[in-house]
Structure formats: structure tokens, C-alpha cells
Length: 400
Image (tube, rainbow, N blue to C red):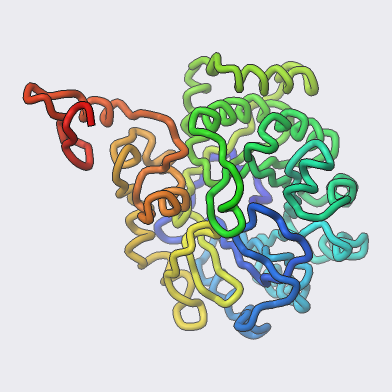
């Protein structure tokens, strides 16, 4: 989540500092979202960072230096953390841009929204996973949740808070995306962050769409970014390749899925009329992004559960800067198609999905259907009837 326009190319040196620090302040949550990585619980888990340890973590975020990372207090439901507002005050006292990711529950009261305003919260994210109650409520696991979500979005927007809408793309809601875009615009939200499913936690049971459909959705999101709100993706950095292609003048695909989505977008929002507001910052799990779990364990991202150290023992900036895996991720030292792709720095693939699919965070991202020219050329049959190995992982007999 960013309180700023993420379409601008970041000047942050991602080798030295993260752009976003996600802190899971608690696992407690009153929802049961099917795709959640956290397997959230009704109460806090043992080992949750204490208030003093939380204040120390905020100091560690400040120790990255300026420009400070954006600190996103997430969960679970961050509003269930008893000392949340003291933590917010400490973060804002440092001048750290601070955002919240609450759940829409009875905790999200008008008083809580006013406290966000008074505390100087930069942005708030709310999840909306469909344009129909049955779709959204089915994902969130609470009947009537959709009816509470739309007024909450409007209330936050009316309060002058930058509102980000988070939507998870899955088989059950892909055909509703254009109507979700309409709801976002009508509610006055500012950012649409679209998450592409990674099979971690409760997300294991949900059906991800195909690589071809991922490509179609990315082209659709490029179109949606011309309707007055910022569009960004999570675990779909290949969206930036699609943005680059479209800005170079390449045509959108002629597939049925794209035509259906784009046609519906035109029906509900009209022809695109605004400037393109699509994310281009070259971040990925472990590059400009780092995640701190409820107990202080640090991972490259929330959906990449590889422990790198604990902020109780090692400063966060040291973990981020010195961990070999993160240095490899930032240097684009990947295998497979991602390793030879000309968009490796701009995109780099989802490291979380690579790990979920291959048990290797440096492997290729199976959700991306792009075939880099270097990959295709390396796998052309040689005179001996075998695939060449230049740029490829191995030599495989033709016809295998």
C-alpha cells in the first residue's frame, strides 16, 4: 500500500532500504477469508511482539534512513491490537508514512475512522472481492459483509483518507472485475490493488486462473487505470511488462476473456478518458518489500514464508540489506524463464509463487505465460536433435 502515486519511478535504492515494511501487528481477526495467508484466529497468538518490542521495531524502520519506508500495519485485523494508536503515534512522531489495513468489522467505527484522521494515517486499505454479496461474502466467510464494506469505503473516503481497495483475483470473481472497478470509482477510492493468488495458507483451496487469463487481466487492468484511480498489483509484477508493452503501442489481446472484461468496463465506466495510472515501481518480494510477522520473524513478503531472521535479535535494516537470498532477488539471479527474461529487473516474477510451485524462491513464476526470446532461442533443436542449453536449465531431448 502506498499513500503516494506509485506510477512515478522510485528513486529509492532498494539495495539499501525497503519502500514498504509490512508489520503483522496481530493474527487476531473476526473474518475467515478463504485466500488468507495468515490463518487468522479470534485472539492474539503467543509470542506477539510486546508494546516495547513494537516501539523498537518502529525505531528500526526509522533506522533505514530517509526516505523512510512506508510502514503498513496489517494483520489479522490491526484494529484488534490494543496499543495500535500508541504505535501509530510513535511511527508518525518519527515522520514515517503510516498506513493501516483493517478488516470491515464492528471495530471499524466512525470513531475509529476519525482517530485515523487525527493520527495522521496516510492511507487505509479495505478488501472488496466481488460486485455481488454472494461473491464477496463467500470469500470473506461472513454473511452480510458486502453490505458493510461499501459504506465503510465511502466513509473513509469522505473523511479525506486515501483509500486503497484490495481485490483478490480468482476463478470465482474474475468476470466481476469490471463491475468492481465501477464500485471503486463510485465509492471515491483512490487505489485499486489487485492480488493474484498464491497458494499459501487458506489460499491452497482456491482456484487460481491460468497464465493466459493472468495476461488478459493485466491488459484489462491497464485499461482500468485510465478511469481516475491508480492500479497496482501484488504477486503479479508481470503487469509492469504489460504496461510497458501497451505504452509502446502494442495491441491488447484478442482473447475472449479480455474482450469480455474490457467490453464490460466500457459499459459501466465508458471509454477510457484519463491518464494512465498504472504502477511501474520495480519492486518485488524482497526488493523494496519486507514483511515482519506477529512474532518478529522477517520474511521477504507475507506470501513468501521463508524466515530470514527476527527483529528481536537483528536490526531489520541489517536483515534486509545483508541476507543472501534478498541480495539474489534484488540482483534478479533467477532460473528458468525469469532468469533470461529481458524484463527481469522491471518484473522479476512473483518470488512467492515461484517458491509455492517449485520450493525455490529463485525459480520462474509459473503464472506468467511470457516466453522470452532468449528462452525460446535456447530451446531450439540443435543439429544433434537436442535442445541447446544456452540460457536454459538443462538439455532436454526433443519430444520429451
